Length: 461
Image 1: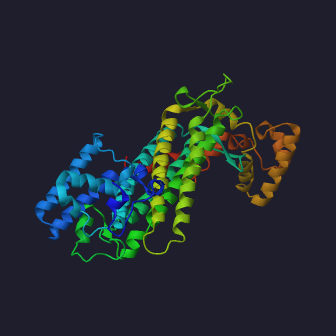
Image 2: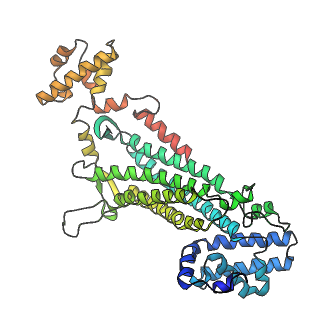
C-alpha cells in the first residue's frame, strides 16, 4: 500500500521512499496488534449497537478481526513496511477478508484515539503482569528472610560499619520498597484505565456514538471528559515510566549490594554457577553479571522517562506526530523491568548463598556495638550526650591499643566509668545488640518475626 493509496485525493503523489520509511512505525507498533484488534472489535460492536452500521456488518467486522488475530498468532499475518503502521495493516487485511464492509470500521474513529486506546490496553495488561512479578520477588525475599531472622549482618551508613542487624531485617527493607512499587503501579493503573476511544482526531465526531458502551466492553473504568485531552494525554505513560524507574532504582540498589557482598573484600555471599559467568582470560573469576546488568539497564529506563518528558513539554494541543516516539521507549521500559525482575528473582532464589559463618565473624570485628555502650550508661542515669563522649574516647584509646570493646577487661571498663559491671559483655555481644532493638520496625528478632508475618498477610499468604 503506497501513501497515495492510503491517504485521500488531497495528495497527488506518493511519499518519497526514504520519507515513507522514516514515517513508518510498523516495525515497533506491531507490538500493539492484539490490543488494536480488541479495541477495533469493541468499536465495531458499538457502531452496530448505535445503528451506524447494521448488526450483520458489525458481526462481519468482529469475525474478520478475530480471523486476523488467529493469523497473527499462527505467524501467517506479518505486515511489512508498506503498511506504515499496525492500524492500517489491520484495516487493509480486514478489507481483504470481508470486502468493502471492512472500510466501514474506521467510521467515527481517528488513528489518534485509536492508538491512544491501544496503548492504554497494552499498558494496562503489562502493569498487571509486572505487579504479579513484584509479588513473586517479594515472596522470595520473605522466604530468605524467614530462614535468616537470627543471621547477623553488618549494617552500614555512609558505607561504614554502623550497627549489626538481622539479615532478615535487611532483606525486608527491599520487600517494603517492592510493596511501594506494587501500590504505585496500582495508582498508575487507575489513570491508564481511562478510555479515549470516541474522541476522534481531536474534536469528537458527528456520528451518534456511545463512548460509555465501548468503555464498558473494554473494561475501562471511565472515559476522557475532553476530546482534546483524550488524544494528546501521555501523562499515564510518564507516570508508568516514573514507577518503572523507581522499580529499577530498588533493583539497582539491591544489585549494588550483592556485587559488593560477592567481592573478596566482603565475602558475604557466594554466587552459584547458574547465575554467574567467568572471565575470558582469568580462570579464577566468577562475575556477578546478573546484578551488574540490572544496575546497567536501570539507565535505559531513566533515559526513556527523560525522553518522554522532553517529547511532551512543548507540544501544543492536540495530537502531534511527535507522539509516535512514545512507544519504543515505553515498550523497552516494560520489557526491561520485566526481564530485570525475573532475573533478580531467580538470582535470589537459586543463584546465591549467604555465608553465615563469615557474616557471624564480621559482626564481631568492629566497633558497631559502641552505641550500645552509650545506651548502657544512659539506661543507668548517665546523660546520653555525656555517655556518647565517654564511649568516643574509649573507642579512640581501644583503636590505639589494637583492641575491640569486647577485649577490654572489667577493670578497664570500670576505670572508664564505675557504672560498668560484668553485664556489659552481654550487652555488647552482637546477638544482644540486635535483639535489644525491639522498637516497632526495628531489627530485634521479635520485631522481625512480626514483620515477616505482617508481610505474608500483605501479599495474601
